[in-house]
Image (cartoon, rainbow, N blue to C red; front, side, top):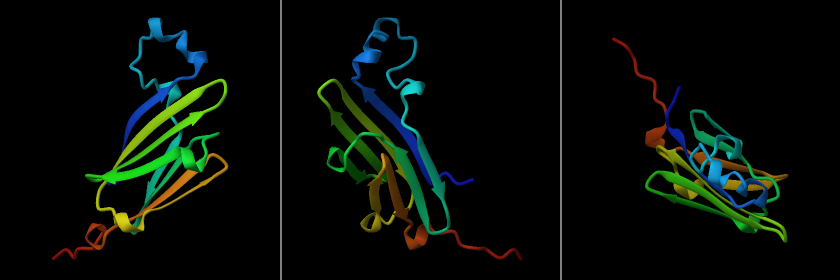
Length: 126
């Protein structure tokens, strides 16, 4: 198992449906049942991240990379609700200039290539 890609979670949901829970809330503001579904995988050359954010449009999403952390944030507004989210991922050894992201059917796919020095190297045992 590799720890090159680690999820840090922050999420806000301003949907009126959930606001009635606020006074009785026993969980922190990033409730487990409000977390966005994400799938993180890794191979020898890259990290792959799949984040489900249905209803959010491409122009409502921002990606930023700083201090080995990829941050995906979005703000989606409709006439009846507002959804704001922020997901952060620690990425060790990323080739930042080659990160690729695309959004299709509510799923954001991000491919993060590894730098040459971050790729696994086989070591001979004497």
